[in-house]
Image (cartoon, rainbow, N blue to C red; front, side, top):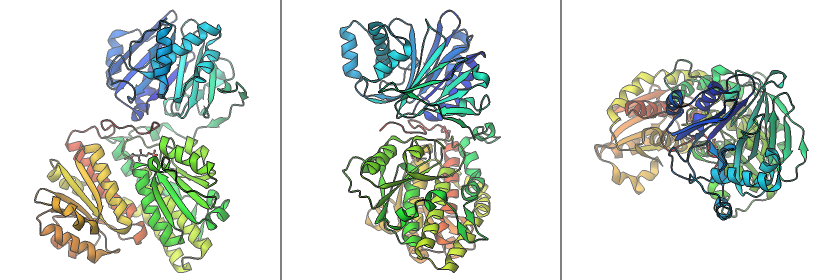
Length: 617
Ligand code: F6R
């Protein structure tokens, strides 16, 4: 949550920071701010609202000159979103400025101590407390900014990524991280440096980046090597400069109205990238280094525990069906937030799979650390390369979906299912739990999925027509069975998060145990009724809804006859192996929520109260 960015070098910092904030807006968008050093003094502008509001304000309010600056886009934790609570925050003397992503948990105690020393505070934020603590340390110990930051951070409890500079010594930016990401872009000949929560703000300027590890801080000075130290013991750390794989096109809308729509349409490509080099159909092989190198751990595992949140948790539920069916390994799927706090029984014979698009979700990361402490083998399925979860796990497999910027997860979900399917297939081979002919059939079918997703996307106009009829609904029910029960949950989550219509996902057979009471002629019920997997039983459920006058939107397999006769609307998807149907049935549900949200004038890419990467509990 919250995006931070900064620049020091020879160019105008303003456009770099503003552009960077726009790219980081997916991380939080309830207020935004920027501070520049104009050669003599600092100029600061901040506002409740989006980066576009900040742009309007800065255009009239401040000079935009200066080669040093930091900026912030906020997802509020301490203090309501308003102008005063927006970042950057200045210290009492006005000398130090800071932007912060995270939460300082003991801010109240520190605030009281600082208040006793005569400090007063303008905002309600933990961040203003931190910048004043740094100032107090700097005065008391008579140390430079870097040292003051280090001493202060050793006194705080919580999570942070920060960028700070001192107007009386405007030749450096000090950054630090614990629990929230920070990347440093290194310009040519070290003539300029960039700082950001991820590398997207500086992708057009440099491909060389350092990702700070937890408990590291860095002093960034033009013309010098970045000096990285451990916050707790001051030891120097060798900088690990990585070459960025991301390109500019990946983080732009490329003609689509929204990132979400672009990302829905990217799925055929994304799924292909996920299995590229891993699914070798001609050889009848699946190659995944992370699985291969740790095969014994998987084969000796008593069970697999999957931890994740939100959409990634839904992918975990699909994986439960797939792993148990293909590889006959017992699987438990847990909300990371519950798992980490309930003293779970974990042994050295457990394999824990953490699924996370961002690789930064605080609860999932904490669950990973807990499972490691208890001796389990921990495997990560992440999209963001070099993210905290990817680094913290013993091994893993990236989804290679490319940057997902729309806050509602789409291509992350289908690529997670693809990775997990590949893993389950590979393990089924090693365990001999699937016949050779079935194995080959599944390889062949998985390879055809991108083309089938492409075909499924062709129903977009039809889905849009259906969306028109239901945009004023206040409630929606999603039903599915087996592999498609998690898809029902995911469909409901997509609708509620971007259109603010209340929606529930249920296993179709559970309807009779309660939700059926909700059904009347105003209740749209989206039913996944593909030709395999309990088809007849789902048809009976559809009859039950129909006889109570519910409106039925059914997702069926091409060529379906039975459901077509009963449902109010049918959406056809190509036929595939039952286990892979979620990769297709999810497409019309993504499109349906997208179109309903657009028609309701909702901000599809930045739904209210949400943020892409949930780095706080
Ligand atoms: C929903 C959505 C969220 C995320 C969840 C986990 O569309 O995006 O529910 O799936 O916050 O995020 P990651 O996968 O980054 O751990």
